[in-house]
Length: 507
Image 1 (cartoon, rainbow, N blue to C red):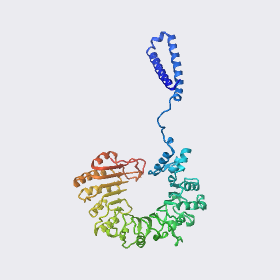
Image 2: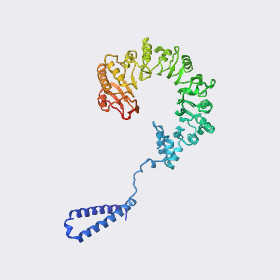
Image 3: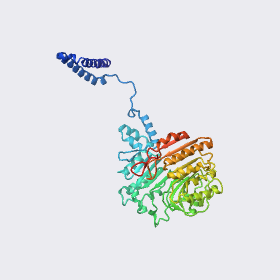
Image 4: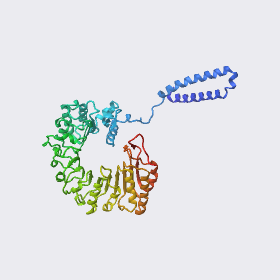
């Protein structure tokens, strides 16, 4: 029997069985006095059902092969599959997680599916150039490093160390052989991040037994280094007065030292564009950094004890945590290219920023970030009175402010505070937003659009993750009303939770 005739027969039997069933249902009462006829019909139906099941089992084998291409990634040719892996690798957040919530790079994820995928993945060096080495989650970190070096060939690497142990004398994972492997690994990195495990935040042991000496290695390709989990207490009363790190990194451009003391670096050996430190520094140290890095464009400083005026001719991004920075840059002329300024909303910062702008407007500033800060807070609306001195301001970002601060800012703004003519974006990130805030915001936007004759181009409201216990999540039902008042609204509060048993939404 041919496949086509089998399929035809199968369809006919389906129809016959249906007819018999319908006949039986219609004549069940009429057949009450004809038991023989009923028995024959039941037998025929049973036999037909048996034949139908047999034909159904045979039909897939007898059907002609489909002319359509097979579906699914598993059927892709090797070269196409390789391109898929490359695109996957380049996607943001391409690292996945195992069932234990450990980070897995695309290369390892692809290689673990089956033999064919493994062969394709291993043959693509580029998807092995970025990885996360989690010392707390990886059982054989040395094997992992060896695999990474072999499969990435000679390509530059992007590596992140998590939960780095403090010393080989207290942790077998950092054996001398492993340290040698790590040295080879960092020598091939263009981007490197090292985070020490928090359980050792108060003591790192001997310097020679930590990973810090690795930063003396030659790293000719290194462009970005970020340290995390460093504690100043590690270096209390140490004797490392002559030790210098990162002296063999000629291409280093981005450096985040965390709390590593500045005495460990030799600024003249670098040509940085971005620098971040949580360590305390003097104004003289800051001046020396400026002399060594004339092209510095981004600066994030935790604390400046004293200072003298310094000119940063190329500085565009400045993040401040202590008002002492304004002793070093007392005038806008000291930062002629400044475009981004992030400061806490404390009374000291308000006073220093007011003095900074009294002499002359800061005509270059485009983005102002006002974030919550420790210490005596200044009324946030007082910062709005400085807007006339920022004629080129295009974006205002509010970060982590409480509801009353946000409400007062927009309410005061409505009472006649200057509207920067070029301001077209407002962002509220991790702020508390209750009903009073949304009402003040709606009133502000309506009046602002009326006064300026144009609609605000962009409004962003973002509340993500765990918020403070006294914070309130913005009500989603306000979204349509806000969309009426701005050209583009970015509204993301779905993942927000307050630090208590349940989320609190605005009325």
